[in-house]
Length: 198
Ligand SMILES: Cc1cc2nc3c(=O)[nH]c(=O)nc-3n(C[C@H](O)[C@H](O)[C@H](O)COP(=O)(O)O)c2cc1C
Image 1 (tube, rainbow, N blue to C red):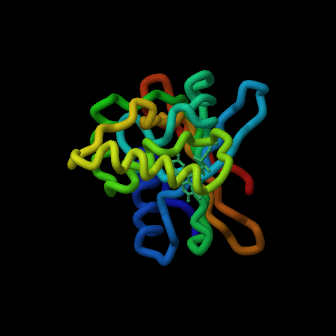
Image 2: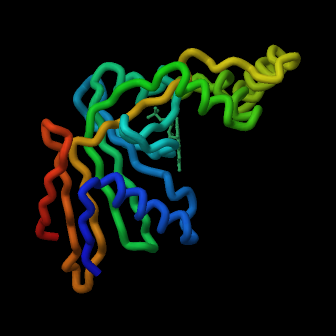
């Protein structure tokens, strides 16, 4: 089955994401995020993409984590979605901006209370001596915010947007004759498309 191009790749992406949501796939919004560390090494890990809009693809994290630090010092990234049972991959490369306080607040406050407490308790990517140390931190913040219905967002818990400059759609084909379609954003914000050899 070959990919039918749309004029805007975000429309095609939404269509594929919807297909993934209708399937049995766990966490269809999960993507592998690659950043560059201060030694120039790529660093990859999974994130959950929470919003797709004019600013690109947003996920939320601790800005003091490795990925947060990488993105703050080198605001370029790649995201790769893989929907195995649909035999599809989407690969995105783009520049990164931080979400506004209002955007990060809105997402933070939509999460369950324990996840919000966890955001305070976790010094993400810092060395941890034991599980008990983490649970003590959770208990500490649970108590600190016990009287508050809505604990505030930790200032370091923020969103990052990845604004795509290229998006490549990959659909598995018989005998490895896969279909690949790459979109490239132009200066006037329109998109060009290019089919690629598998
Ligand atoms: C499916 C999946 C989704 C994840 N989503 C997020 C996420 O949205 N934000 C986040 O900070 N970590 C998320 N994680 C954990 C990260 O992969 C990673 O372990 C953690 O953020 C630390 O990464 P870093 O040290 O490179 O900053 C997710 C892990 C998995 C397996």
